[in-house]
Amino acid sequence: MRRGRILIFILLIVVVGLVVAFVALRTLLQPAKPQTPTTVQVYVAGQNIPQGGKITQELLTTITLSQDQVAAVEYTTDEQADLLNNKVAKFPLDQGVIITSSMVTDASQAVAIAGPQWAALIPPGMTAISIPISRLSLASYGIDDGAHVNVNACFLFVDVDPAFQTILPNKFDPLDGVTAGPNITIGGDPALQEGPIGRAELDPSFLQPFYIEPNEPQRPRPSCQALFQNVVVMKRGNFQLTSAVDAAAAQTAQQQQQQGATPPPDVVTLIVSPQDAVTLSYLVYTDAKIMLTLRNPSDQSRMATEAATLQFLLSQYNIPVPAKLPYALNPRIDALAAPALPNDIVTVQPAP
Image (cartoon, rainbow, N blue to C red; front, side):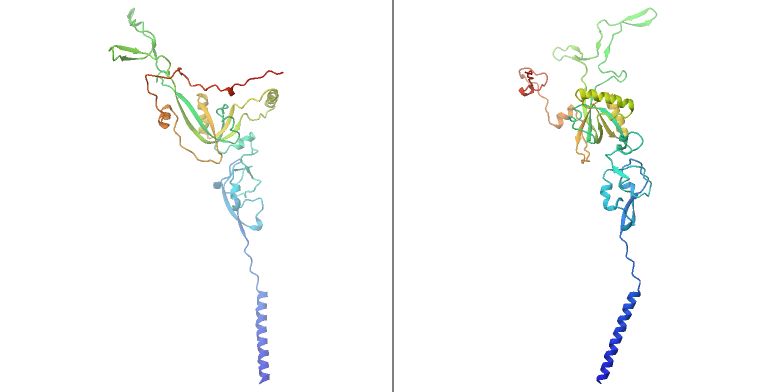
């Protein structure tokens, strides 16, 4: 009985050993499952991008690559903010090319393309135009290269004769006589004299007609409006001359400037659309007064503005027109002048 138990126990050990050996052998002989590689989305040019073209989301697409195939200079979807942060192409990029850091640069840096190097600063579809400026119109020279500005313009309007295109009122010249036929002349009215055309009014007190003429030329009516918003300043002042003749002239001018004071800038170059450039050309040659106002470069908002006229000022700011009273201030005031302050007068002491 005892011997039978021992045989059964040995048999169980052998069976368990065979099962363990079978499982271990099957595990060793089974081929290892391949590991799924980690993939990364990489940006490529979705269409042809010209040299100096701005990198935007619409121009890009992505492809899937394994992690070990992605170089450090390639842009992944995790680096989207950096790629779309004011970047332009250094050279033409064909469709399907993987975008790397060596292919793009910041838009504020010039790209080596045909023509002047600063032409690369102009986005496609835009153009650069220079306009005259002064210290007042340039925010006390607080506006510099790369600044974002609004462009305001002021005009003077007058009434003109539609046919003559001259400022009203017209002047009349009475005819001495009208020729009615050969050697026949009808005399004119000797009471009429040359002068501006006025109007007839009836005096309510004496019931007598009077002919009233203007005692001064027509007063122009000013109007100011914000024409363009969020315009980028390309350059304040003149660009650097490049040709040999121009470089020599610039060197002479620089030597003269070193001897005296540096003159302030008198022009500024703006990056605008072609239509806005035509508008600015019209404003310059019609003697409109242009002013630039500085704005925060991160402010992308646009606000609708009302044109400033005399009627707008009176209604918008509730300015009343003074009534004609039987008394007035003394002394008489015909013009508003700033008061003279003691600190405004600078006394130059003679050298000892």
